[in-house]
Length: 325
Image (cartoon, rainbow, N blue to C red; front, side, top):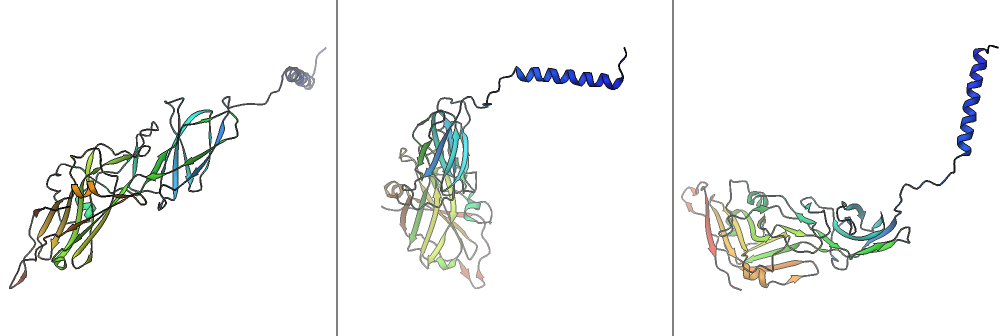
């Protein structure tokens, strides 16, 4: 007996239904579990007791898996109020630093001991905002690289903590500390300031970088340049952020250089050895500030004649100044 095409289609459909039913009755359903390691929560908060005058607005936290050193750090960004992270069970450490910076760059983040903050290469001209040709560096520090002034940065590393699978979570409190220093310099009894058209400064022998976890300075010593303000007819003041100074290397010299362009176009730079002053200066831990004062800076009067000031003089004239404690 021959079957019509329509009846054959119904037979095929019936066979498929029977096979499907057999497959379904042979299956045992289980809940799907994509993460066989499970996880635990970390509740992150920031305690600013070590840097009460901070200006951080947001924080980065890098989580390092102590049991798996080859694993890349897991990054979370938080507001100052903190937040939550989800991590696998095991032993961990966390490194934190503020991320509301522009000049700061980061390297060495492959392990919790090596995250390092630094800035790009700069120049005396950029730092002082002078635009009149190439400027000299301090006598005795001519070979030092010049770097951009760092932004304020705070950071720290946590103690090691352990997470368990599907636990109640871990409360992680981080205590950021200063990872920079503000150097404030005041120069008093400066004659002829009214004859200057431009004033700038630089400091040599400062650290080129700083490690976030330990607070230790990088090995390289560099120069930073900055602007200078006239606060009255005989006083100059300046403030610059530095990563710090190497207290473990007493042979490193610190030269303060002041650049002055007079109204007659002559250009002067004064090199002042402030090594002793910096080494003996106290650091105010409340805001990580070093303040030093220098007495006297022999800025001359411009040269004048019957027709007024002389034209611009090419080249910088250098003067070394001796200071006492």
